[in-house]
Amino acid sequence: MQEIFCSRNIKSIMGVSVIIVSYNTCALLRNCLASVQEKTIGIDYDVFVVDNASGDGSCEMVAQEFPTVRLIKNSENQGFAKANNQAILMAGGEYVLLLNSDTVLENNAIGLMHDFMQEHPRAAVCGPLLLNADKTVQRSIDIHPMFFHRLVSNRARISWLVRDKYHPDVFPYSQSHRISDGWLTGAVLMIRRVVFPEVGLFDETYHFYNEDADWGLAVSRSGWETWLVPAAVVTHFLGGSPKARLPEQEISFKLQCLRQNRYYFWKNSGFVRYCVFRFLTFFVYAVNLMRRVIMAAVSPPDKRSSAIFKMRLGWKMFLATIEPEGKKAN
Image (cartoon, rainbow, N blue to C red; front, side):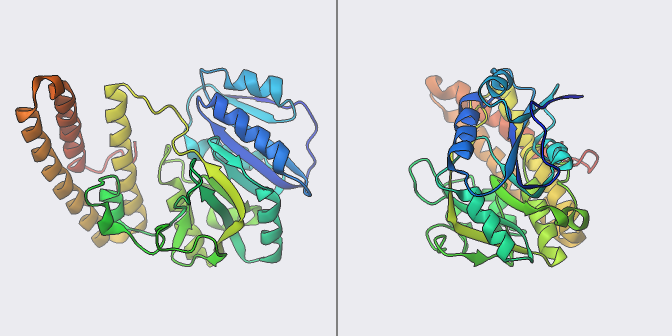
């Protein structure tokens, strides 16, 4: 169920419809909306905020401080893919810009990407140069599909194994580039509206993770083009939704990521590659569980509770690797 609030008449055709999905990111959302208003010049645009049942006053802030924004209030957390689809179906822009609430525009990024899309009629989607909070370059491109990256990229000791050509240390993010073998992160995406009937909307089976990789793969397979436009610059404060989780919430989050990875390979990679992925996840998490059991057994008393939690997490993750297909992504 949703409520839609609109304080002005929207043109039937806009240049760009900006769509921001938010979940408990009130302060970040305020900064994001302010940067859109301050930096965007030279084009017609409208803004949608889709709130996934935040409890931090986000909706009240938008209604009071940004009355021209179209606010969609969901009564429950619909997830990133479904929330974006809600607004895409309502938007009237020739282009839609998906913008994370934990971003700030550093220049007229929307106008620059709009002009680029106008000049490149085969471009389905483009993205800006993304910066970290410290203004270093943030990785915004990945190849598809990348087995080992999805297994070990969050493990610092072995992440060097998957450093590929799109790592910021080796790829020239300062140069405009057509991406023929990969996809752009969903933090900031400008999409040509007419591609949706051919490529489809975002797969709502994904709740919050992998929907951008899945959709980017569909774009590549369709023959449309994907571009990096570094003249447009956006700072992305990674992980804008609340980072502090209760132990059970942390376990649920990790399990959902694993299941959504599994669904991605089941959907996109064929039977053989999917089986390889299942075997690799089983092996990685079996080794991880053994390591955590040992760590829990030898941990000093002051670190034992943390070690036991990690062991519980390792056990749950291991069990998830041997689940039957059933519910593939949740």
